[in-house]
Length: 277
Image 1 (tube, rainbow, N blue to C red):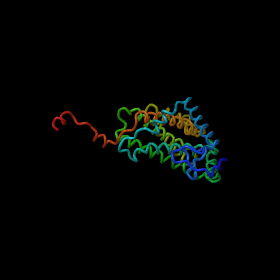
Image 2 (tube, helix red, strand yellow; image 1 turned 90 degrees about the vertical axis):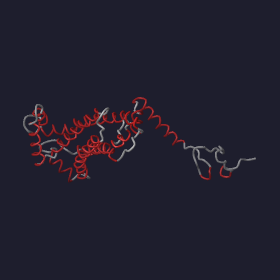
Image 3 (cartoon, rainbow, N blue to C red; image 1 turned 60 degrees about the vertical axis):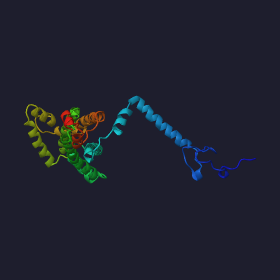
Image 4 (tube, helix red, strand yellow; image 1 turned 90 degrees about the horizontal axis):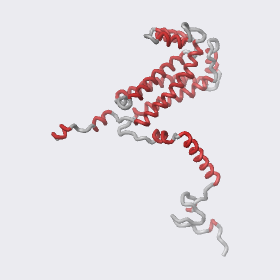
């Protein structure tokens, strides 16, 4: 007896394999579709690439701990301030790269390059404004994040090192804001930087040396602007990226703390209280 066409065959019962159907995929009229060869090869290739990278980097334990770590009870929106600060830094990095395409770190050409970027380049004014106001937002967020850490007592044992790293990140963020303020090289940024350098030079012991390092000499000259640009674009972001990596590693390793009001409720009773009870 000749075989019937596939469209006229009786469909298999639920849970049964029949007529070349698969158990793990559905199709029309209850008949499960055959796997697509190109799609299956693409999926297997992606899995192989991920496995190849993981074998050579060992990144899966860290990513698993970062993405699947336990969150303490009572966690609220205050705990997102660190992630918000990290997002602000990523925005600063991306917009900074775009601005660097057109900026010329020269005392004679810096202002003209900024004017060209703002007035002539497509979306240049938008990206510059995003970078400018994003810097202010990043400073606000990092202050709020450190305030939350302090008032929630998350700087205590065993997280003292992470608190020190956070303080250094705060200082580097302020340095990045200071060095970036001069780059438009207009009258306001020029004289504001002069005042900032005079304040820095008045600091004890290391103040004069730090001011000379930033100015690239004892006076504000044409070489000061390239020095600020190098510190702003290379030195400070590199340090920030390294410290953020160490910060995230310690967060994954040590976990996050519960809010102080929940920790107070969870404290065990003393032996005297237990006897009285």
